Image (cartoon, rainbow, N blue to C red; front, side, top):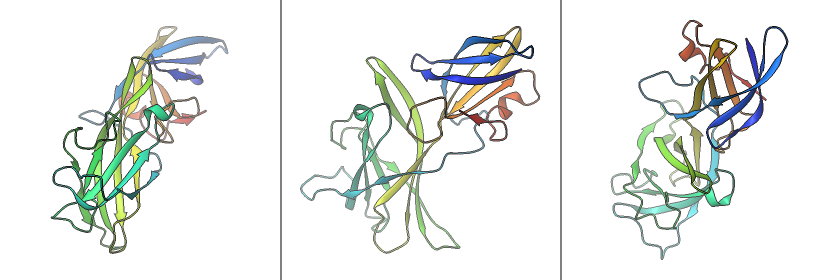
Length: 233
């Protein structure tokens, strides 16, 4: 069985697809998709290219959250269907890492206050032995994206910043870690469907990466998430 996605994901969690059956017939079916993130089971064996977020110095009169220190830089992650879903982030050094942006604060409630969204995500700071660059990695940051009235979906990303000079960088990057998946049956054939965001914008469309595999295939739950079987468009 071969399937091709023809329509975009709706935010009721349904993916409409055109099922192209072996006899050449086509029918419209739908798949209920659920949020997935890395855990104990299979996860995609690839990731999208990192999206840059330009950072600028936090105004000197703006107070810092407890434990943070300057240099402190702020930027906007442009994700979701419109500007209402965009989210500001703050990255700072601290007393233990005066040169590295090791604290990440996410304005989860979008009220321009970084002190009321819970504790900072503390980076793992490592040096690349070959390039000597310092990496600050913030894995598994789960964001909430509003897609309309009463429709809020989780979305997980990894953030990272790279310092190649004495001063902290003015760019942070992120790449999506979560995906959507579900099952469907077409003419008695049970299949797995997975959809992965290709450009880190938290908007799933027909051009994003997707995969369909018969559930009876060997290692189907793993292979449906592999780059070897994924398609787009």
